[in-house]
Image 1 (cartoon, rainbow, N blue to C red):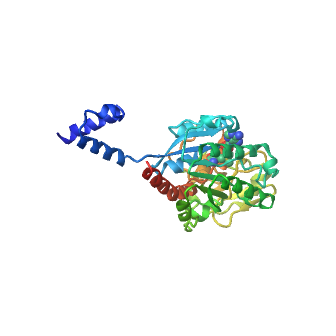
Image 2: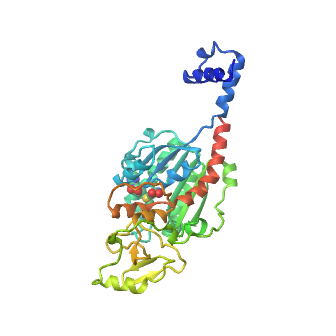
Image 3: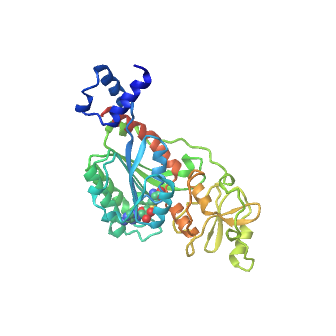
Length: 363
Ligand SMILES: C[S@@+](CC[C@H](N)C(=O)[O-])C[C@H]1O[C@@H](n2cnc3c(N)ncnc32)[C@H](O)[C@@H]1O
C-alpha cells in the first residue's frame, strides 16, 4: 500500500468517525496507524472571554495557537462590532447576568476584565453594593457550573485596596472555595512590555492544577520601552485632532506647554501635564468625554490629540487589528477599557503550554 493510499484510508475512517462498527474492515496495523495520527493531533484549549470589550484577551490567547475561543460576551453593541470585525468567533451581545450558565459551552479557560467602576477611584467605590458587581457573582456561578482549569481576572489597581482590602479578600476566598490556587499582582504595562503606557492593573490568575500554579509567577523582566514617536500614525492626520483654535484658552495653554516630541501630555482642568517618563499616561474609558481629555503629543505639524488608532497602539494591539466605522468617542472608550495585549500575552505564554500539556496528556 502506498503512503498516499494509507493516508486516504485513515482520512476516510476519521471522516466517518471512528466507531467499533466501521473499524471492522481495517486490519490491526492500520488501526495502530490511526491511533498514532489521533495521538499527534493537539487538542486546543477552549477559552471563554467575558466582558470581552475589544477582545484583547481573545487576541493574546489565540496568538499562542493552542487556544480556540468558544464563547465571548459583552453587553455593549460597540464591543460586538469591533469583536466580530476582528475574530472568526462571534460575540454574544447580552447582559451576562441574563445568560443561563448551561447555555455557555464547556471550556478550559475563562478570561474576564469585569467592570471596574465599583472599585475605581474615579467611580463612587460602592464595591459590592454596586449593581455592576453582580457580574463578578455571575462569573462565579459560571465557574461553579463549568469548573474550568484556569480563570484570569483583570481589574483596576484600586481593587486591591478597596474597602481596606476586604473586597479583594472576598473575591479570593470565593474562588478558593472552588478549589483554585491563586496568584495576583499589579502589573504596569510600561515596566514589562515595550509599550510606553503607564497602566497599572491587577491580574488574578486562578489555577486548579497545583503543579502549574507552583511553576507560575509574575516575575516578568523589565523591558526597554519603544519611543512615543514610534507608536504614532505615519499618515496625514486630520485637522480635527490639532489644537488649531487660536481663540480658545486651551489652545494657548497647550501651545505654551507642549514642547517635547518624546513624551505625551495631558490637559488637566487648569494646566497641561507633561509625562516625565516619556510615556503615555493611563488611557481611560472616558477620555474624549466631558472634561476628560485625550492625551496630547507634538508632531511635525503641531500639538494634537492621539487618534483612536494611536490609543490602540498604546495598548499594544497589532497593526492588523481593525477599527470599525464608529465615532471617535466610542473607539476611545473601547481602547481605554481594554487590557494591554502584550501584558496578557506574557501571562498566556507561560500558562497555555502548561495547560495544553495537561489537557493533551489526559486525553
Ligand atoms: C473594563 S471593560 C473590559 C474590556 C476588555 N477586557 C478588553 O480588553 O477590551 C468591561 C467590559 O464589561 C462589559 N460589561 C459590563 N457589565 C456587563 C454585563 N452585565 N454583561 C456583559 N458585559 C458587561 C462592558 O461593556 C465592558 O466592555
